[in-house]
Structure formats: C-alpha cells, structure tokens
Amino acid sequence: MPTESESPDRGPFRVYTPASLGDAIRHYRTEAGLTQAELAERAGLHRSYLSELESGKETEQLKRILWVLRQLGVRMTLDKADW
Image 1 (cartoon, rainbow, N blue to C red):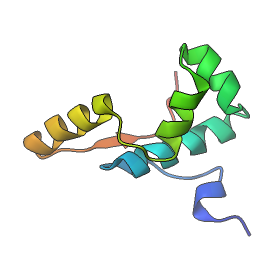
Image 2 (image 1 turned 135 degrees about the vertical axis):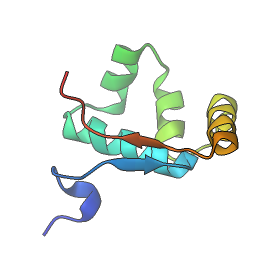
Image 3 (image 1 turned 90 degrees about the vertical axis):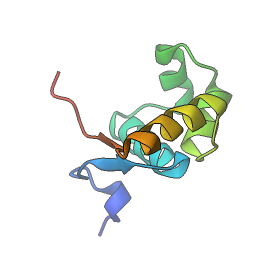
C-alpha cells in the first residue's frame, strides 16, 4: 500500500516551512516522471539548487517569502493545476 506521499491522489500541500515546500516539489516532480536534472533544466535552475529545495533547505529567497506570508497570517497551498 502506498504511503501518503506516494499516492497519486495526494491532496493539496500546505506550505508553511521549507520542508513542506520540498515535499510538495518532490511529490509533483516524481508524479510528472521527471528527474531532478530534467526539472531543473526545464525551470532554468541548477540541479543542486532544486535538490536543496526538495531537501527542505531554507534559501534566502524562500526565507523572505515565508516571512512575508507569516506577517500576513497566511500560507501557501499547492495543488495540481488543471492548466
């Protein structure tokens, strides 16, 4: 039986920490059948940066975004887009 993170029907990801964003990125990347290298190339990123995001590293950009959201009392929710 697949775990929650392996389920193709995984619901929205609530993003409130670097780790929760990393889990979401990894889930949707693997669901799309992409390697880190493939996604990084498509997104114009270094694979090592994508790896850091997936592992939950708090980059300076992410730290700032999460801080702004905290000040507003909101969080991001990531869900599969239909576009």
